[in-house]
Image (tube, rainbow, N blue to C red; front, side, top):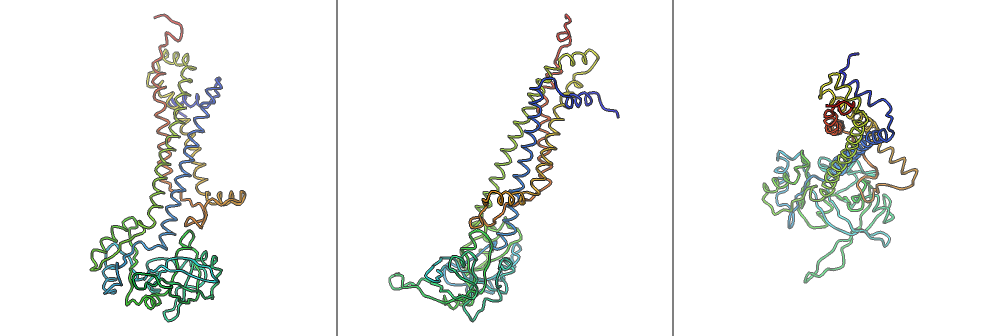
Length: 414
């Protein structure tokens, strides 16, 4: 098969065992350095992509994208307010609810948490909490009976099982803003949910009509809604709030859970920069390899020059040699990185079973496994960047090779 002479010689220099073992060692180190950098970048970005996907699919499926709650009392015209919210082009669905803070008591054990009094008929349009309910469902929340759904971690802490009764303690304000003894209301536990993370120990659900009776409200005091562009949730929440003739608190998932999302983005950016620098350091090894290779091949270069080889042909010989190392290291890194990224969750589970150590605790994070999502466009970008950096690293040694004077190398006089 026909190949340009520069490509033939360059690949031959790359594949033939070098007499100088130190040069061979540096060459292998550069290939492995590029491979490790590419592999680490693919695996790291896949893990960050996995966290982002889990945030979207799991956390944001149970946390409303936006919330509007009244500063005092309840909505004066709830249905009209709901219609205004739902008619906003950025909103997909809305549901009324009441939120209150309370204490739960059972067998002298207590737990503080936030109660969300939901509208069962419309709640599923806004969140997907119901799919995390392991026992029971919204249909068991009754408007004429005090029923409640708790997180499994709360039920475990209070030693509760489905069907047990418990006390809901609400603070009461007396004269001169002094607190009276709390109001006690007996509820029946009709369901358990398990979302993972701290939400399990912070939330409880009751029927909205129960909350109206308890608080003496005519309507809901908050509206939750789902948006079509989750990153614009805060902006859409403000737009909707300005359309309502109420004094409102404006919240979105960005204000409540956004710090976690920002942490993921920051770590992802830092990881990208740091690991690209690792690849750059590995590419500098290519410079060392080629500089020493040029010194070893000075006589060969001089002979090629006397035979009529041009400067560009000589340059391409060493560009090909360095690019071959970069290509081999990049392909090795891509293959291992893609394999590890596709099997990262299973590998971590295996390591956890072997070591007995849990890397992610479901009590702290919203997931208890290490997620991974491989995006092939990112793999392609990483491969192109790594290969381009390795080619750039060949330019100085290649130019140096083309400047060799044959007469000096072959012992002739000027």
